[in-house]
Length: 225
Image 1 (tube, rainbow, N blue to C red):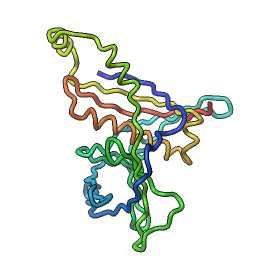
Image 2: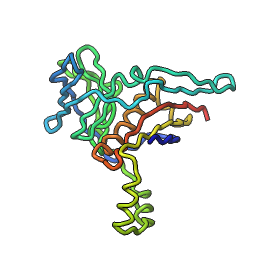
Image 3: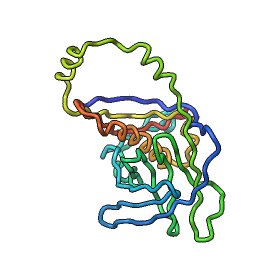
Image 4: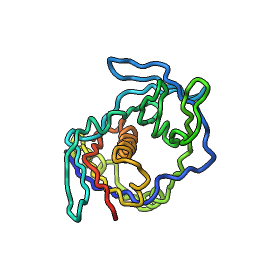
């Protein structure tokens, strides 16, 4: 079963809830055959990263040019070429290398994000400094859902489960408004950020079954409104 979902991204990104932790990530190991990487973030956190995939092969990009809506298709594999995950730690990051040092953007766990520190000097051995922020969570929607949950018997739940397909693929198309996408210097920066967000959701659904739920990012609209 496939479900198409339209998502709208408004305003700024998630706010940090406390002072950031400054770290110096180091690439400990890299496998040429699989692209797997082992990155030490700090003494208590090392990520075992595998290549991740969340973008559709024919990735739709929609823009408004001279008052006309123009849709183009790009290679999804190219969009997500720097996307990696550590499923055990619920981490999804974009990983690139620069002069032998790693540069990471994304989530290093369910509640912490990482990004290079702009304008900061490297360490004596050339490592790029990064900041880890705790992401402020908002539970308002959870409270609303809990307050209005339907009371269903075990028999009713079992009957509904029997009618569900074994796998549900949710096709996600995201509209980023001007206040949101002006935070990104390039379209690729916006695209990989949204890939990180989508894959982070997939990691949480990885253990789901009956049905197994998987999100695929099929496209982005970079709105000017």
